[in-house]
Length: 323
Ligand SMILES: [Zn+2]
Ligand SMILES: [Zn+2]
Image (cartoon, rainbow, N blue to C red; front, side, top):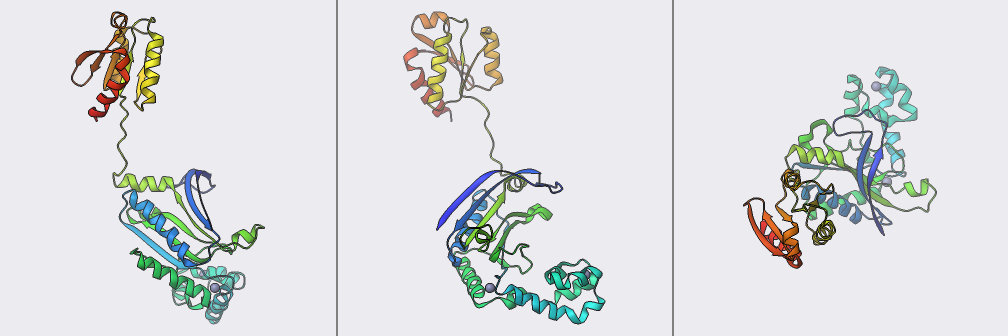
């Protein structure tokens, strides 16, 4: 078995709508080489868990089986049997689709045809033994894992390589655009594109959709844009020292800025304020000559002189205790 993931920008030529862009970002998980429903359950659990970890609570998991090339023809036949006596009263579209693709009769928008479609035989009744056992196995595992789900027979896939498990996770507060994750099994895909017959299952999550969901619940983390230290270096004499200390502090994981333009002390202090620096380290010529620097705590305005060789260790401790 091989487990893979991907993450990155994708492109589509659909009409944009809320949370749907022509360039969007998606991540996905795929597992290849396992036939049984155990991997289906694991993949579904992973998707649910990712969304729960982000703090989303009103998740609705829908599962279905879309059958396989063995049982789908039987469903087609049953559909044709069911619709045949009514064909004369149905719309032109349905009449023309009857032979080619009777499945499409199920989503006709004509009210009369819709009423008729509601009573049509479902794919579930036609599942072969293998598909039935697979679906039962999946439901058993989801129940064992304590995951709530609903079976939705309208959850179908348009392409032939999709088989058995199909699922979707909806986030109800998003309304019409509530699907945040879709996935399922595609046992026919790898063979169709020229590889050896290999079962596979996976899901994809649109990141903009997920962000919309997180944002709608005010769950976006607060970003702290302030910096830890601003290094003030009046005059160019100690520029190399300022640069060296800045780099050393950054290597310790601190957020550090300094003045690149050789501006006046006043201008540098102003910039430190603008960047909301927690500390300012002043490398004044007199202090440096004595082997010292001035450390200013910007919230208390307290100033202390510290030895240059202790700058990194002192600031590291200060910044940590500040948080
Ligand atoms: Zn089947
Ligand atoms: Zn119709």
